[in-house]
Image (cartoon, rainbow, N blue to C red; front, side, top):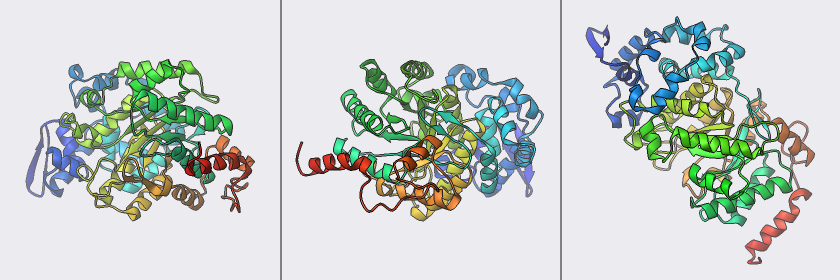
Amino acid sequence: MYKTHLANLSYDFKTLRNLMAKATPPRSGDYLAGVAAANNLERVAAQWVLADVPLKQFINEALVPYEQDEVTRLIIDGHDRAAFAPVSHLTVGDFRNWLLSEHATSEILTALAPGLTPEMVAAVSKIMRIQDLILVAKKCRVVTRFRGTIGLENRLSTRLQPNHPTDNPAGVAASVLDGLLYGCGDAVIGINPASDNLEATARLLHLLNDVIERYQIPTQSCVLAHVTTTLKAIAQGAPVDLVFQSIAGTQKANDSFGINLDLLQEAHLAALELGRGTVGNNCMYFETGQGSALSANAHEGMDQQTCEARAYAVARKFRPLLVNTVVGFIGPEYLYDGKQIIRAGLEDHFCGKLLGLPMGCDVCYTNHAEADQDDMDMLLTQFAVAGGTFIMGVPGADDVMLNYQSTSFHDALYIRQVLGLRPAPEFEQWLQQHQLFDAHNRLLQQREIPALFKPALQKLSGHSNGQH
């Protein structure tokens, strides 16, 4: 039992899971689950106690029983004790102080990552302020490769997200063209299909592959269908670059997604066998989000941020090219307003980076949340300052298929310009070669569509005029 006295009151936290939940900064999902602190005083008491918990305790006391949860087994069985040794004597509070010190360099944090468990990094995030989360995440450098090199210092990549409510090829192609003209798409050109079936998935895969091959774009494509649909597409010979799947931090939550670790392993091996990467073989793309386990009634009594961090153990096993926290997508039942969304996005990035993952963030909100674009500008800017790997590029920031608000092609231009950030080097060279950007990575003010894209534009115009 974990106990303390504060303001003449006694606080008893029966388990480490309970202590972690009570120490979490306020968010609506934890209130919905009935695990949050009753008030700020109880929250501070829990944070006070949590700071004195030895990091070793997270190895000895599983938040979800080892016997009933394969994610717990993955975390415990995969723990690298040799990598953990340099910080194994620290408490959570000591660990925070060490992370903020000059001793915790990028090289040391990279070596430490296999020795950290999701619960350790979730715990330390709960006693950090926003500037702490930014400072430490900025020191973490995670580099991955497929057809481009993602995550290098002073670079920020984008996922070009050309979703269409009917998967119309001309509509998708128009959005792809628009995004490329603004320098977006170096992380991935990734479509959420309106219909998760094999025929629609294969059609979109061929469309994206044709665009990438025709213009020799050093990027990768992904259709964000269920992993089983993608496996069928691979079996039929479809041009699959990245395999996508939404993942969560408990076995029950992953069951609700229709996946398990064995299935993800099968998909990972299938994608590796295709050998479609040119500069590397990181071929998985995962998305997560605080509240996903709770929405499936599969949170196992944990707070949603700790559940989220545990999903990163699943991602880490498969060496992904990209991991994306879709932070405000589920809605205000889980993250009520802009303040909660901002905090959650920075927590997720911090935890993922400490665990060695290439973390992106869909800086987003639903229209019924107490948030607006000003809040998203704050999260976008802070995320980029923290060294985030990639963001979304959505036409007009308004996803007309998923019906939520994200970041636009112009937002990517803004943040690259204000912080001096550049696209992935291979993609940057392509942009300059085709005179879309100048040598200083500034968007060239074109008087007309570049010659590279004129045939495509004429073809799209024919489609819009009813010609086929």
